[in-house]
Structures are given as C-alpha cells and as structure tokens.
Length: 329
Image (cartoon, rainbow, N blue to C red; front, side, top):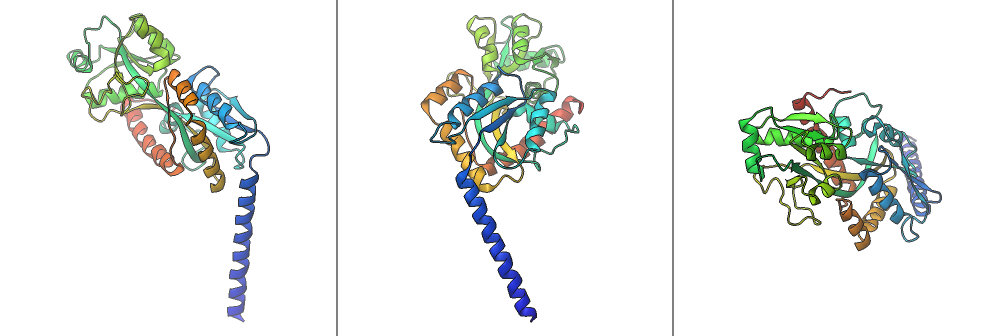
C-alpha cells in the first residue's frame, strides 16, 4: 500500500510538472499580446532615455515582439524609484527595466532601497556599452595620462575633477583612477555630466570623467583636451583614442552601460525570448550607427553573464564607495 501511495504521489507530481511546463511554453508562445513597458529611472533626453527609446522602436516591430513597447520615465532617487517599480512588478514580461551603471551604484552604497537587485530582478541582456572619457582643461600642463598623473602626485589634493553628482558612476570613475594611480584629487559634484564638462571647459575644475555626448561639442571647439577612454577596449566610433590602460593605468576599466532586467520569477522561456529579441534589435547597421552617434556601442550578453557582471560590479563599486567615504543616502 505504501509503495502504491508513493508511486501515486510521484505520478501526480510528474503530471503537475508536465502541466506547468506546458502552460509556461504556451504562455511564452503567445507572448506578448499587449503593450510592453520599459521603465527608466532618468528624465527624458539623457543617455538612458535615448537607449531605451532606440531599443523600444526596434523591439516593437512585427518580426520581434509585434506589440507597442512604451518607455516610461520615473526619474528620481538615483533611478531607484524606477528600479523598485520594476522589481515589484508582476513577472509576466510586460514590465521591464532598463538600468545603468548609475543605478547599480545606488545598490552598492548600502542604502535601504526596498529591493535587492540581485535577488529581486532577473537579468536579461545588456543593450549597449560605452566609455567615459577623461578630459582636462587645455591650460592644465599635461598632455597625456603620464604627465597628468605626475602633476597630480606633485600637488596632492589640489587638482579637481567634476562629476555628475556625489556617488555617481562618474564620481566612482575618478575614485578608481586615484586608487590605481596613487593620486589624490578633489571631487566636485555637479547636477549632471554636461554641467561638469562645461565647468571643466570654463576652468572651474581641471578635469572630468563623463560621457562622450557631454563633451563632444567642447572637444570640437578646442575647449577641452582629451586624454583617453575608460573602457577596456577602444570604442569602435573613436578608434584613434587610446584607453587609460594603454596609457599606463593598469587594470583601469569603468564603463557606461545599459541593460534590461525583469522582475525575479520571470519564466526562463520569456527571458530567452526577450534576450534573443534584444540581440536582434541592436545588431542592425542602422541601430549601431545610431548608438555610435550617442557615444555607445551595441552590446549584448547572456542572462548568466549579466548576473555575474552585476555581482562583480556591486563588489567593485562598494569598495570605491567605501574608499571615497560616500554616505548611504
């Protein structure tokens, strides 16, 4: 009797598992049948908004998702308002969140956010990556990274650098530079990367780490001197600009990146479907050219690679946050 009961339990469990698998497969096959939202934590007009709208435009085509893809901006609190909304949404594939390096920094600061980005979200794929660029005022007596580092060492704590805000990714890019070069710089926070770039061009600060679009007009006008890019490899749209690693700053890598996540519990079938759609969406020459004009390169990865990246980046950012003495709020 006991053996029969045991066999019956296993058969019931097997049937239940098979039924659940079939239901998930059927759901994935019919998805999507209504509009999909992509939440972003920044105001319209910035790099995150640009990336999300470019991605949405391609994803909603008939050959990919075939439903409207709506970009919804929920700015504030370092993008954590949007991330929390995405983390607590139903795991049905209709609410996605595009996060950036800045959003991850907020988690690394140890603040009470109402979510755990590693536990409460399902990584799907990167969409784009790009460099920050190190630029300096033309009157700074340094024409390359070696001369800049030597100058900073001769004047510890006197050279200033601007960023898009205290605890921002650009702030941490500067902290990483200091830790790897043994220099001491004075950080000055501005309201955005563009403001930091203008302040550098105006001589308020000597240098800045910021995005390419923020400094492009100033570089063309000769108001800033470009030292190098912060990525591990040269940007495809700036092939003549060396990386800081090439210029002697060993192990330096800090990128601007944008990736798509869903809520934890998002079925693997939908994760795979969305990942494949994102990869197809950013692989066309038209999208690559558009991203390049915005200072980015299209780039995708697997959910597993994205998850590992988040884990490692949180640890890296937490170390920089601690070294910089950045408070949790």
